[in-house]
Image 1 (cartoon, rainbow, N blue to C red):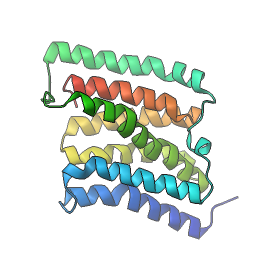
Image 2: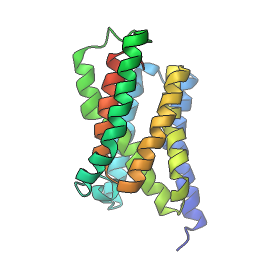
Image 3: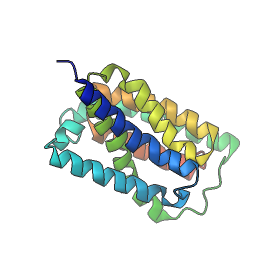
Length: 200
């Protein structure tokens, strides 16, 4: 059954408000860069509340152990491949960005909060939105662009290109398995390696 015009307008409104406006407000300086993680947490909490009010089960958004083993098997080679490439680059070229001031507790926050929340928003919930209005065929490209766009606040072209590429990989994987845990695992591992080696 095709989505109504109202549902498509609602879909567009949600995407603009949740995924574009906060970043645009940061770019023009109305929201400080310092608050980027607070903003991520607030938006995620709002989305979780919205899904609970509308009786959308977390399992529908990828929070499931179903398909977990095959999903991890699928994402593991590409995750290790990217990690290896980053390590090779680090040993050959050294750090690209000085992340030496980052403390150990940031890595805990990144693994336990930032990565799960990002994946919930940019893979789980976004795929649900696209599927609901019959736009699932556009999910892969648009989700990767939106995921890359959120990183524009760092003003770094390699970061934008890498997040676009890995966003396509994670989006393709999620579309096939619809399991957030495997993508969170990949994101956590690659993010830690990229930050620790000063590549991103």
